[in-house]
Length: 453
Image 1 (cartoon, rainbow, N blue to C red):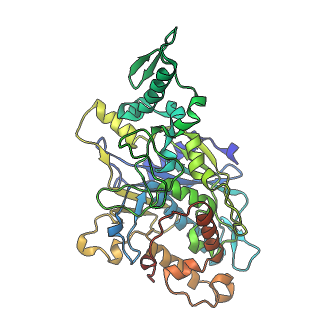
Image 2: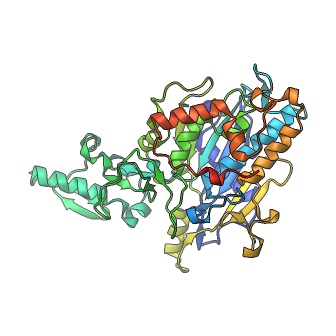
Image 3: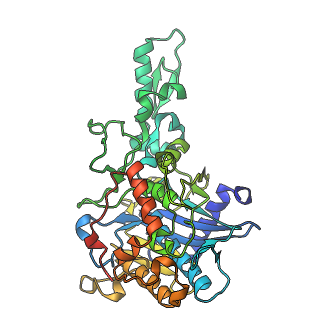
């Protein structure tokens, strides 16, 4: 399937879709703001390609701002917005198959009331940037992945550290070389080879993450501002002020790569999880090793998963095309033509390939323009927030005669969002094994936040 497209083609399609199909509202102010972009591309065996979900966003709310009513978006990073937008698309496709018997990406499965993805359809995930968290801890041997912009921001100091250590160990060389280090030169020092970075310096980082280690993990070395970060750990996203309860995008991608991108609710209707065949990252600081470690390798030894679940060997690729409203592009442009401070855009945009209300623009977890007085009202809700998605799911369930429902939903007295999620037994069993064997320190929200109807 990979032969049907290239990484640059995926990036170009996503950038074009962003420019043409997404509204001006919710996009960064030119020259002053930047944003992150993520999308899901449907690929058909015959060569057809279509963007089916897209998200932008850079923010997540603090733990104190979370609500038990399920009507706020806790995490509005682009990857999460795109994933929730993709779930809207999948729900609509299940509607077409199960309720309307119309053409869909799903075909009937072997189990009663269950569906499976058609064999000629696959999905590719695109992100304009390396996911926050473990995938963003780029080892020093991949320092070539850094642009001059990154070096100017201090991310190249690790190369100087390794070079300095080599100079101290070897002494002055008889034929000194000069290695360029972040704009300066160290006489008598050659470039560190990859082999020299395999041991203790594998955690000397050319690029760091702002995500914080979760309680129960080993943690990072305590030298403040030092070049070391511990790889492979679970982390939560940083936030201004209040601590967030949102896991890093690297951690979420690792979870989805085992449990699927459909979530617990849709698993009721699916015979197998919906996995993505590839992840493509735009031009940015990038390490193939760090991406594979964060998304695949951390969970690779997980065993005893229910039928249909697996650790997906997702293909990892990078495009050489840069997102022109991304941080690096905007900050580079502003340096050449200063117009005040550059910062992240506060809005998030959700787009799904669905016939009704495909677009959604939010700020601080609610629809853009929501006043404090309107918080909690129906009009303040994003269509991808938990409670709205739950209600759309229940509407589909109610449209199917009981005899046509899957076994997990027949003759069950389920009421709350949490009860419906827990009733997806295969999904919950897989999640239990994944936590037990690989992601044990995952920060789980209290049931108090999942008891809405």
